[in-house]
Image 1 (tube, rainbow, N blue to C red):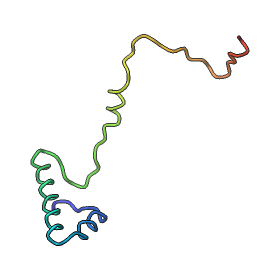
Image 2: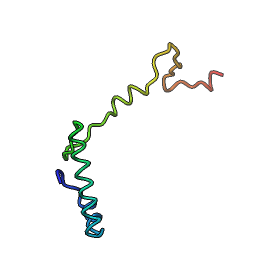
Image 3: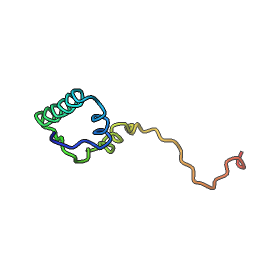
Image 4: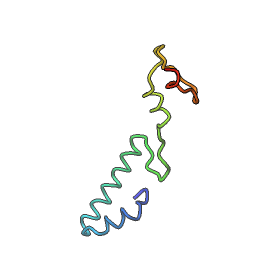
Length: 80
């Protein structure tokens, strides 16, 4: 197998029958091969996260409307 599996996954796979265990390991190896063939990496490196990009995409564009911001310490109940 190109990459090692986490120990808990290995334990689960090893708890299967011999033929099932071998079938699962071969399937995982074929998935790694397919990932590499498609240009991806199946190494043990950390995944890139797009957290910053998601924040930019989900933020609303400036539409000219703004909510008044009040400074802390202002007591509006006394004013009314």
